[in-house]
Length: 134
Image 1 (cartoon, one colour):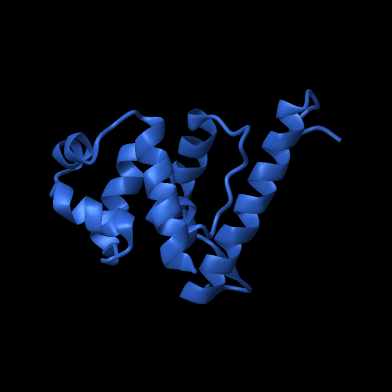
Image 2 (cartoon, rainbow, N blue to C red):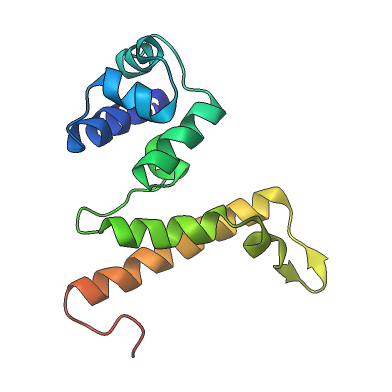
């Protein structure tokens, strides 16, 4: 199911920017025939390509994979703010529990939890409430 989520997100992101596959390919350095195959589901996207798409659109790779369901009301700035933290390797490496470093699995779980808290707080702000108040 992840492949379908990736296809759908990539098509929606490209179309939201009013870009053709050719124009997108030129901008991110991926051949447009590869983009066509990825979007049609005949070829998987590589990790490197996923990173290029995420960087170009200003979203997380989790969002493109469908693992992070960014709310409709989220602005580009909201997504970039979270992306900056999630992509910072030093941010996750500073966490420990009882003096023990977190495993990669624990870091991934922590990122998911923080992401959910982040969206909940921003949702409050967008509804007119104080995002970091009571």
